[in-house]
Each structure stands twice: as C-alpha cells, then as structure tokens.
Image 1 (cartoon, rainbow, N blue to C red):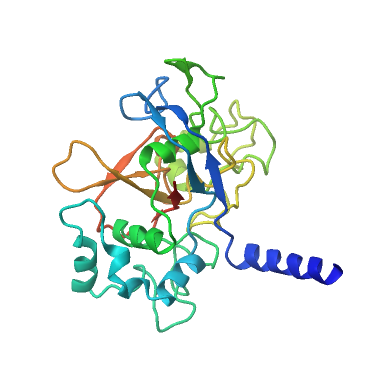
Image 2: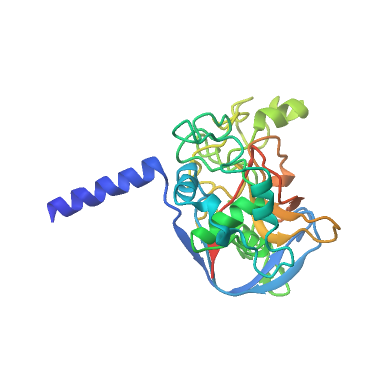
Length: 309
C-alpha cells in the first residue's frame, strides 16, 4: 500500500508539473441566459436557451498535450480534419497541405521541445497558441472530443446564479467567471483573477492605473498579473478566478475557439470567447462577449479547450 501511494503521488506530481491534466467538468442539462442581459453583460442580444448535458475541459489544451497530437500523426491523418456536416468538409486539410503546415505557428519540429522558441507560450503547461480553428478541430477529434459550442462555453463561464437577476425564470449568472466585479474585495494575491495585459490597458487608459479606487488596492499594484508578455500556465489563477463550475481561465490567458459560426457574416468566421493576455479590454473578458475570427487565423493569443457529449 505504501508503495502504491508513493507511486500515485509521484504520478500526480508529474502530471501537474509537466502537463496539467485536462480534467473534465460535467455541466448538467438546463436553460441558460446568454448575451447582454442584464445590460452590460455582453455584446449581443440576450437569449435564453436549453442545453443538454455536456462535459467541458477544466483547462485549456496545453503545449504538451498538443505535442502528443503531433507525435501520434495528427497532422498527417486526414480523418481528424474532415469537418462533419459541411459541404467543404476538407477545407482545413487542403489548407494545411497547401501551406505545408505541420505544427502550430510558432513551433519548430527540429528543436525539442517543439514550443521551445514560442515567445508567447513557453512552457509544457501553458496553453497552445498559434493554432487555427482547423487545427483545434482536428486535435479535438483526435482526443475523442469536440470543440464546445459558444452556448456551452458561455454557460460554463457564467453559470446560472440568480444573485443578480433572472430572465424567463432563469438565473442570469455572472458577468465574469468569478462574479460581477472585475476586482474581488480581498487583498493580494487574491486579486489576481486572470491573465490579462493590464499594463497595456493602463497605457491606453492612464486613469485606471493612477488611482486607488473602491477596490482598495494601492496605486499600480494591480497593473500586472505576473504574465505581461505571454500566456500563463493553465490553472495559475485557480481557484479564485474559476467559473461557478470550477473551470479555469475562462477570462483572459487566451481567447478560445468554439464550434459555432459567427452569425450574419458572408465570410466564414467562428466565435471566439474569453479574451486573451494580449491587448484585450475588460469587455472582452465578460462571459457574454463574443468575437468572430476566420478559421485560418493563427494568433499569439488564441487557443482552445475541448468538450464532449
């Protein structure tokens, strides 16, 4: 028994230190309020929808996890890239082949670890970035999962608390994953709720960093979260920054691809959620905010997490 316990502890330490497991969180079926309700919660018209049971990863997919996809032939197995239900189901595969893409944008297969020279996500347990929607989709299929829909993602981020009101008898949840105030009332380090480029925001809006306002923090102490120039290891702001379901990094760190097309656009765009470490505003960090990006985009602050039925 002693040997078993020691082995289990060592395994747990190795997993958390070198990869962070993509623990799944179960979200029970039910109705959820989405979008800008109450006023100031988001940037699109409110709606109340019903969702079935689903599971969503507690953490964003990490560099180490994505490297396993590469090593197992993920970029050379067409099956993972076939987009079910779309007329142009091989668009991602053909794009990858034409552009000879075999890794995320900032990686190099000839220099282990592959992410060694990625300036924006530097560690085994930081979220993979520089991946297109197609690459995220292929990884999710390889993992036996899928990308979450925008509605699933938002429910997982805002919850359904009735503390701040209801819509059609459904709790409206929270504006941010941890509550309705961007800053919590605790003293540091609990104010570090997400990886958000506060220095950038303070530069654009100088008054935000030059006062000790109702949050009670001394001047400038909250202008940095410790990761001003890159993504943070997943779970760095847990549990204080977690959503009501215990899901990490749903505000800041990296924007996240979803499976849902961005509506009312002639071009193909997919909804991204959550805001990122680079240049996002407070609006972008709200659970009810959504933005659209083309599936070919490979950005320094866009990653993803997986879901399944």
